[in-house]
Structure formats: structure tokens, C-alpha cells
Image (tube, rainbow, N blue to C red):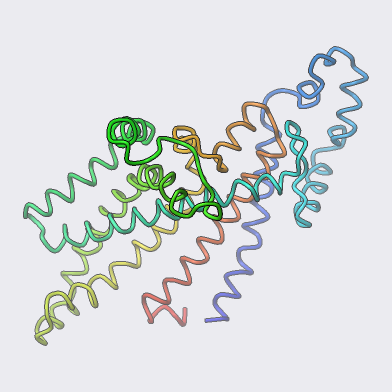
Length: 315
């Protein structure tokens, strides 16, 4: 498998380069002059504005600015936050573990809920179990994330007092307290993904259960559990793995509303604050890191194909 993986890594290089170009170009399209914003009360003085533009290399051509930024990014230097005067790489290193923890927990909830519900719905097609699973899927797709978060805070935290309503405690500081502060936002974030996985798993299982190899397995006298789990589910998981990989990347970049509602200091909250303050280096750094993670997740998804289906290992 080393050959195919190496070839895939080579193919990812143009994609990563394109990501850097898009990230830098989007920053150029944002309205306003960063130099004027940073000048503050002294924005009326052309000399102050000119000095800031010279310091930030804004007087250079766009292609020269891009090459300077790309060369620095390749060496791990994503610049300094204009608002906080701290290295962007350090800010991301502080916030990224928080979002990763939240995203992994949300992904766990989505898989644990969505895949079994989809399998049960397909196997029990037309029964009350099928109806219940589809109702859960419709609920997850229809309920807005921010609304569900607010309702859970009122019910679980305020009325019942089971979990803290907001805040975050690092895993290294208090493991159980950290889980308590993230389990509710992780459920909110993973709820919609679970519904999507459920519906795709159900569709893939319905197709797999009609295949000849499933009929052959049943004809051999295998138990229904082995037929479903070893034969039908294993083949049905291939499109589900594709979707799950894409959704995990979405979780990393889509936790903005959830982090705002539950006051979690992750990447989402960092980039929202940066947008409001036009802190372009932070925006560029966050979008770049998120894009690279998304690309790596897609690579991991391709590797999982071969693990799930041995026929794909030589492709």
C-alpha cells in the first residue's frame, strides 16, 4: 500500500498549493484598508498609514506579498496577530486542541448514533424501528444547531443541573471536568452529522442487502447477524466512510456557532473574533490550517478504503 499512498501524497501537493492561493486571495478581497484600521485614531495622518503599510509589506505587488507569506508559512511562520501582537502559530496551537477535542467527540456521537440507526432502519425496513430511525434523522437535519444548544443549556444545565452550561476545562487540567464541559456541545455538533450518516448508511445497506453475495451467505446457513455485519455492512461502509471523512473536516471548520453558544475558546471563536477585528493574519492562518487538515482527512479516508475492502488495495 506504500506505493498508492505515496502517489496520493504527490497528488496532494498541487491541492495544497491551490489552498494557499485561495486563502491569500480571499484575504485580498476583504473590504477595508488594514493599515487605516491599525492606525486607529492616527488614521488621519498619511505618514502613520504609510509607515504601517510599509511595515506590513502592503506596498508590494500582490504576487510578491503572496510569495513572502508562502515562504514564511512553509517555515512555520504564519505572521503575527495585528490585534493581539502574538504569533499566529502559537494562537492556533492554543486553540486547535480545543476544537479537535470537540470535533472528535462530536464525530464519535455521530458515528455511534448514525451508523447503527441506519443499519437497524435498513434491516427492519417498514417496521416501527425504521420509522423511529427516520424520525431521528429528520429531527437531526431539521433542528438548528444554535437552537438545540440553547434548549439543552436551559434543560440539562439550568433545570436539571447535570452539566455546566458553558466554559471549557483542558483535558490536562481535569479529565472528567473537561468531558463534562464538552459532552453537551459535542452532542449538539454531532447531532446533524448523525442524521446524515444514518440516512446514507440506510441507503447503502438497502442496496447491499439485495446483492448476490448476501443471498449466498444466507443460503450457506450463516446467522442473520453475521450476514448483516460481516457481508452487507462491510461493503455498505465504503460510501459511508467517504461521507464520514468529509463530515469530520466539516466539523473542524463548522464549530463556530457551537463554540459561540457554549463559550468554548476554540478555533471557531478565534476566527470570528479575527473577522470582526479584521485580523487578517489570524484569518489566513486558521483557514490554511483547517484546509490542510481537510486534505489530510481525505487522504486518511482513501487509506481506510483499502482497510475496509481488500479488493481496493491494489488500486
